[in-house]
Length: 396
Image (cartoon, rainbow, N blue to C red; front, side, top):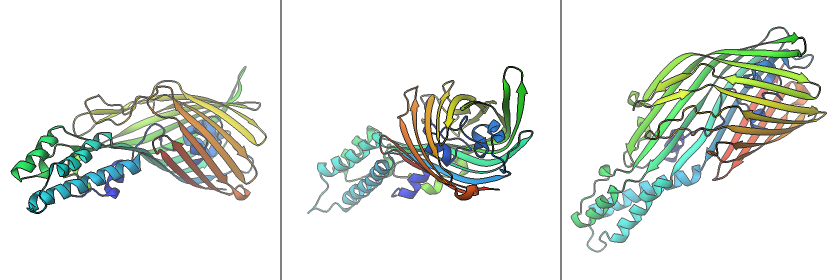
């Protein structure tokens, strides 16, 4: 059975390090920053930002999507080539044409494609969210509905396949269902409905600062599909045999402080640990993470630096299980130039754990009369890592 490009793409939408519910195109263009530099339109990054708004801002509605993929072209081509090679070799063995018999060269051609599976892997990320935000100094609120997928497609060559292929030249029998090289699709989907609440407070010696909280209903869906490379079938992806789910409540907490041209932010995400077992019994856990940021704004220019305070091991599984994510501790920097109706953004993301490659980001925002906004972002990394984000917003 030929493995289609579409089925592979669906099986291997993945998240290297940055995806989160509420991650928007404004943030993506500026190095995934915003917990200190953002305003109320970016409340999912830090609920305390709901108190940051301009006079006349009453309501903001946004719809955004973000996607990132790595090595996808080479991987899709390789698996497609392997499927073609299996079919060609099987046809030649079955035909046993005395004028054109199967040869060692035919076997070597198939084995070369199978061996190349060891270097075949698709990774990426995808995020979708809808948000409504009402800013205020006293009791600001917002509602966010969204989700992201953490997944990858991995393919492995089995040494025993060499014996199977070479024996076919002698016996004249080749059953591709006996190939042990396989493909594995492994995924977790995080879906949330979050209520964002914030209030500005004042304390002696500290002055005014904002506190935000986001209680949320959260569902985890896990998916694990494993199949012989010849029988890898996208029609089986959503069979109940490969799916499990679990739901519960979680919580984000954020602080924000402005001091002159400086902005400071501190956020804790998913403060309640949430775990789920996949269909092979491996435990995947969404763990609490913490990030701090400092930003500076002068006229049209803004700059920010953010850092994860602890290494994030969410969805890192034991070595014997199909890999999902590696531990990561990100440092993000972002720049933004803001004019009346347009914004230019750039950013850089690096991993202190050295498990993920660096990422460059660029963004463009258009906001005529500050009532409608269109934000675009592009991301670039090594190994054909490319991404894009789009967000539409309406301010009332």
